Length: 520
View 1 (cartoon, rainbow, N blue to C red):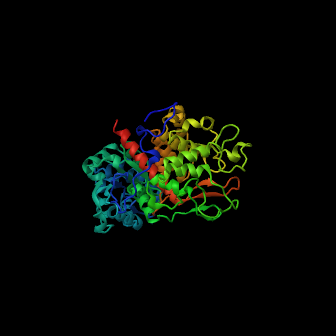
View 2 (view 1 turned 90 degrees about the horizontal axis):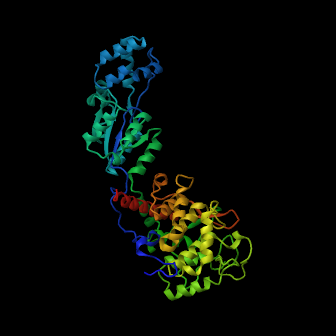
View 3 (view 1 turned 120 degrees about the horizontal axis):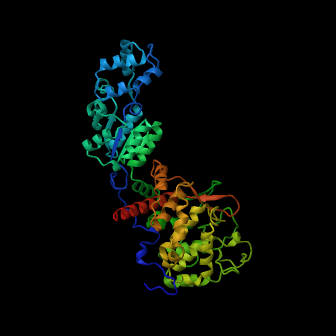
């Protein structure tokens, strides 16, 4: 495709516009997929899968007992270099204790060992539902292991492919040699393996070798992290969208349910699946509301924003109709030559910037024009959007949109269809989106941030991991606010939109990461 006057529409080198995907398949794919992060989990025993009590009722206090457990003598015992009697004798001498009393204390502590039912249930879920390979790795002496192996049912122990003890390996955590022994013996890839332990020093060693280390703090937190790692967020998110097709309504912060056209168009764009949404296919200009307006004026005009998005997403507009709409849009400019918001000649075109000149509306109109080869007809609007980006005027959102990430997301749509826009602001956009990595944001903001970053070949790994952990049990992501009712303070969101954007962002991130890795 030729470029005229420095402006162009979609070029094949930019990839698929807006990340649109083929329609979602009706059948559910298998749960074991390449998009999950791990295939293996290594668990510690003590204070993770099993609990015990240091309150033994003997003369030896819990504090002293823990001191013995942290001694060099005990470490050698766990590595199989000392037998049980010798260990008690040496430890008793070191801490001025009676060796027989110390032995009796440890026997009572052993008897208090019991498996955590919640963790055992989680193991069965990970193995049965997700086909995860499970291993155990523990700093434990041979005599203590003989006791521990009878503290769980045979069917529970059968979940583990192998159990690695420090006594058998003659190494202990956090020594790297023990970890390397486990990885080599099990034949597992550390990058596809999680490690769960209650001691930070052990987790640090695991992470240094490439494992995904998790410090055990509570069952709920660890279960949430592991489920996020073993599930395929894209598959589960798509399943949610299919199960709630045409039922994903927008809601306001005041509890009103809206019948509107704008969000369904965004969901369609993100998924490429028209079976998921309902919207009105207007012959020309589009209106935000599908029926009677809510929380606004009794009559609500068609707007340039919804119309521009409809013309870039829906396939029912002919080239002739699109050009006719663009001709009409060109008649709605203010005195600065900047595009306005509504197809309504009675609304003011001169006045304060926020009232009727909205940066994101301008971006969406530009995307419509550039995708149809007419971007060069809006130079003042393009220049103003560049200034908004340059001077970070978007940081607090705009009159009708929440947050900075929304502006950057919609601007990434423009970059995906226009080489001219990339040439003019691509480098600056890359800097601006990178400024937000790791910053505050709900699920929708993170999804938009990850998507926008991927458009300029940036992998926002920090926010990707945060977004993964936000996915809910049913595969959805939480409701988040995107749109505002002007200055009223009322905001609007859609759980389906958040989910569709999160799925699209994760898919784009995964594809970009694989592509970039292929060049390494």
